[in-house]
Image 1 (cartoon, helix red, strand yellow):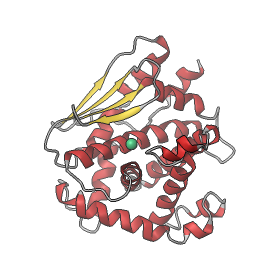
Image 2 (tube, rainbow, N blue to C red):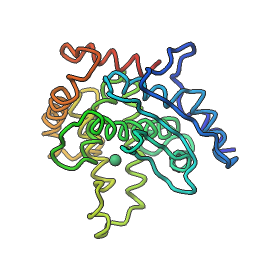
Image 3 (cartoon, rainbow, N blue to C red):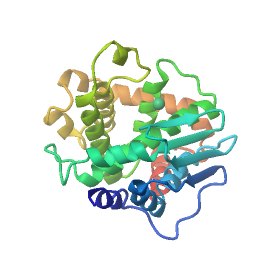
Image 4 (cartoon, rainbow, N blue to C red):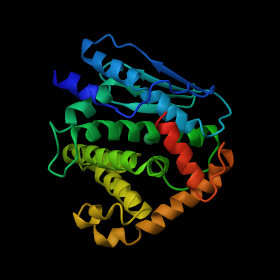
Length: 272
Ligand SMILES: [Zn+2]
């Protein structure tokens, strides 16, 4: 019951009669065998979650078709991009774990149940989409690809409407913090290709604060980001925006024109 309720609030901004996905984006909602995932299946289909992420990525001219797939993964809590068949896969198990980790109504930090579910779902889909863009567009990467994928995903989500961006920042932050509390900080964690969850939390907070100090001033005011780090976040954000403009910008269907056109395009794609 709790799961059913949670899944039903996954996404609430979809609009009826929206245009179909671009021709080079394919979406597949594989029906789950497990009854426990049926609500997630129906809700994500109804809310067109994969189509809406696909609509954002479809603003980039892709050389080939990219597939988004929601499927059951035999118990694996995962999401990945596979270059061999150019597909982003998200497991029901991962979505289910996000639903289970969400607060009953609101977290002590003020994150609503709805945002705690929708935020990480979009953050994860945009993260995997970033891997897809790096591969399909042959984007050179300095530093770790996992960090770069987080940065590009944050940059894209911060171009959404203030309400949608706030939702993903709060929900994504809640998810990283929740995972971080359970994460063993051992040699294995340091050796992993991903940063530690607390690092991913602070990177997301820094990108948000760096994108708009006034809008996200509560991040520093409430102590979610140390002042020392916060000072350089404007520069961190500009660095990612510059790399995006240089490396992915030329492939966009929209001429950014100071960023405003691009913001409008991202926003309308996300709300499609
Ligand atoms: Zn990744």
